[in-house]
Length: 339
Image 1 (cartoon, one colour):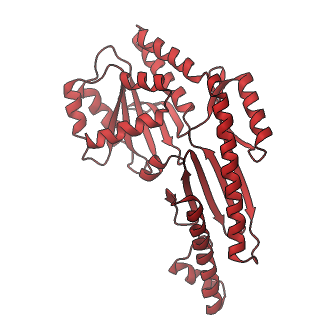
Image 2: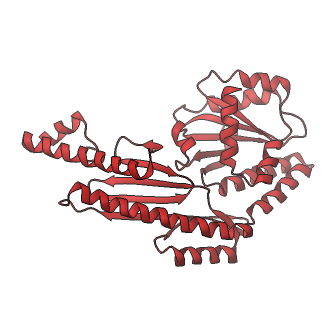
């Protein structure tokens, strides 16, 4: 870690390497000053980062784009990564191939894709990754100028990707399949099948959301069952700010409203997890909650964990507007904390 950032302890470890005091000061100053200089130039170009690590990683948001900058001191290079933050597209196989072909033809720098299978379709998230060797003897101004030039190229190419995404959006089929699955989940009469259909619905919503990552589902321990475990992707400014580790989802596709007992049971599952791993849960009840359940939920706001709710009304709105699941979860979480 010494090579990434300057701290008082860094000087001590450098001295132990056999360097003279003057060399230690010069080297520490070089490590510190270039990182600060690079960051200041990036802020001029991109605005304030929405997240910065204690080392040299900076995350910026520019309209619909997310840009990650990491100064690798060991290799003396800068790693750039850019994505279109509105997410990818869920397309039939032939359209997905056409989409990938056009991206690679129009944006040669885009050679990286996250691809998930959703039924008979593919969800594709394009990203651009660039490694910029800096050269240890080049002046700081020249080095940062080279980085700025590549950042501008990255922004331009992300704009091209966004244009192609909009071009293919009318062909997107993911939400039509999800809407059909939601209809089946509502009309199914067998309780076990109703529950499985709702879980499958949320697994697909997670798959086409660029801000969520599925960790596990249908987890069974000796004492309990957990429907879905996910974690937020740090490309989202909202989730990166609160930095939650894993998040639990419990699906209740019941004919009746969920009672206070089920709220307490779900709270117990969160309390049974180490807080460093889990402190947020979403209880999903398609037919809503009883008044007692709503009162029970209010009692968890002052704890070291929080439970937010999602209802059938929320799901219908999400599918109708083709919104991302992460957007709904963000809003429901904020409401749970302040309502």
